[in-house]
Image (tube, rainbow, N blue to C red):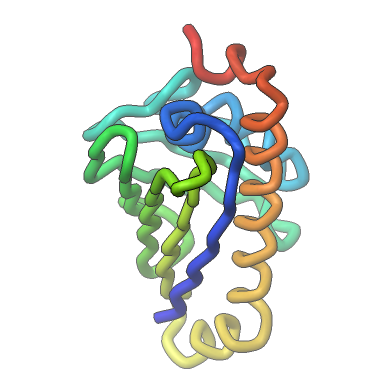
Length: 159
């Protein structure tokens, strides 16, 4: 099972970074290339522990749906989402937030996934899917960083 670990440092309050990372609206904005749209469950605002969201997006040229549930949350330090239905055999994503001595925030993503289709899925993971998922998360984190550091984030975290 591939595991991606991405560290992003942001110059913004930890509460802001935490809320932006769980903002449905910012997620849709940050994933414009894949046309992600929340179509069921929580479709706007901030997702909370126990809640689900179903996404529709175009990945690798194919429209797909993916439903995830927030399985754990410790504000403003950690939350985890797990796929409960979708194209992966399995997928979980841990989001960790840690204040640094200089006042910045370390946002760490730990993303685990398994492609379906047995050996064919393992080949896809090795040949392109792991790189694709890493770029996808890096682009999303870049947008979170830009919005958090701009100070213009209220539309994404306030009702």
